[in-house]
Image 1 (cartoon, rainbow, N blue to C red):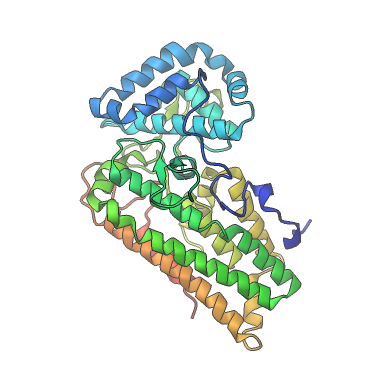
Image 2: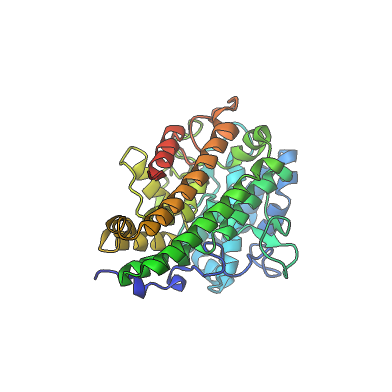
Length: 408
């Protein structure tokens, strides 16, 4: 059955008009009292101190052996019982496991090549329940990892704080919070994309212009916040203290074979390779590329852009797929605009301005990638300057995507 823009409802994709790809309610900062995972939450709370003391791995091994392993055969039942199908609790548990698991791998050099059985079993179980791999991804790092300082005030820099850290400090916090604010500035984008495609279906030029203008405004606001990154996130500190914990175990030189999740029967005791946390796991830009019907040349980077969606919340990746299907099945926004370039020149100008705003955002991101990563002096195999945290060469590919966003 062919999709129709009029049948799309944001709530079907866990998206909401006032928050976009952020959760519709502020994430939990703590689990309910006496939760089975409360000892792990306490460990996560002390993570910066444990990393500084060099005892994080020993503590996780202890909890895994004495608390989690004895009940690991019942992990599925326990996870269901203690989450009660509560989405906020599941996300909080996922943040805890993702941070602790990531820190367990990268807290010392060399990184470990296996995760202890009890911890690995529960990490896999909660990850499967939430439809993402057992590794830190953008959703746990950014989307579900903040809280408002004053709950009566908006989600903006100055009123948001990070809930979970690795080492902590202003640079790490600022890096995450800038992304949270960008997500909030993008909150009108999903509903604007849907409304724009509905206007295409109705052949309503005026309404289409209105929503393209709204997207442009959102992109300019996003760029304004992105430009604030250097205020409190230093390039050297980011590279040496923040980035090392974000790497995955796919195409990482320090973990060529990946990681073994001990006791996880689904993996048959074979090492797994998962990509690390990356801003490419945000739904904003892929949704815009699909909605604006931007054509990118097929390269070796293309399969990665498809694969990385598996690390997004399920509803977000389903939304991107739905918009792509519409664009490829009779509701191409670009085709609609091009066909009316002569009869409605202002529509083409508005569409071009929208592409220009996305180009500007991608250009600033490309600049920061060069400064914060590519130009740094590599000291460790596991923190390469030529490969992204998700395990791909990035500079040439990012430039290609940026250049192809431009519209003459």
